[in-house]
Length: 88
Image 1 (tube, rainbow, N blue to C red):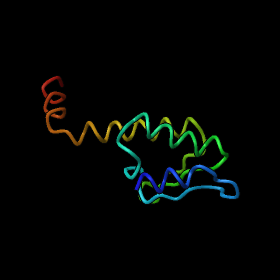
Image 2 (cartoon, rainbow, N blue to C red):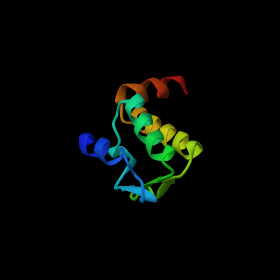
Image 3 (tube, helix red, strand yellow):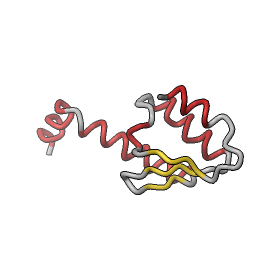
């Protein structure tokens, strides 16, 4: 749950990184998601997403994951896909 994650990331001293099964486990709320990722990075830890084989070790990596998550949410919406098809 997000409550457990929020508690875990308060103090990551002694942890090189945090392991998650998937980047899709992060909150869907963009602001909250960025807060979590930045909190991890600001403490000098990295974030590992096992299924996607992605490691977020800096802000640039975090932006790439954010882009992937945004694309994923767009592609999961049938109405958005239909709009894109009509414009192509």
